[in-house]
Length: 188
Image (cartoon, rainbow, N blue to C red; front, side, top):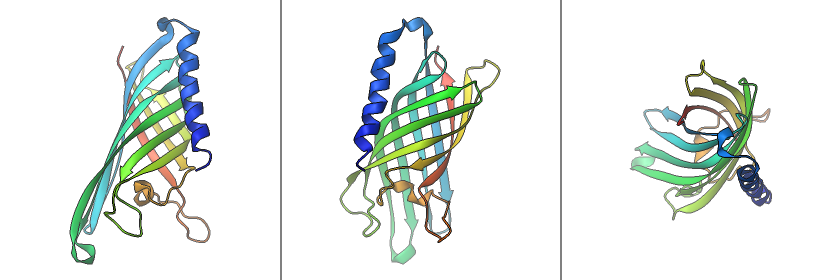
């Protein structure tokens, strides 16, 4: 949590630095989507992230992001309930040779989860995913696939992503790691 301010400052400083370097002839824009879903007889969740990307010199990609996350319970413990989590933030990716990418994705989500009492008053929950993976544009079509692994350095116990974490350490403890697949579409 103490490094959250550092990452936010880093993300924003990159945006301002790039905006002063070159003319817009080297700049392109994309819109990106990522998503996940898990379902069972007991309930489930799904989420969608939207990113508006500024692409600087084909390698540096940054911009704002929005997220909507829906969770529900089909009656485990006697009551059915559901809720929606909304939030936003920003991201910075670096693309390497149309093969790999690495990046930081910082978001603040308005969530009623605190895992000691569900449906508590909504709180602002930070997430800061650091990671990377495969990134490929398909034959100059303007469509790019990003598939990667991200680690949440904040690991807030109230994060709605805890239901999406699947990796456990040697002691069986859940680690804040997610797999994320996203698509970016060129706007110009």
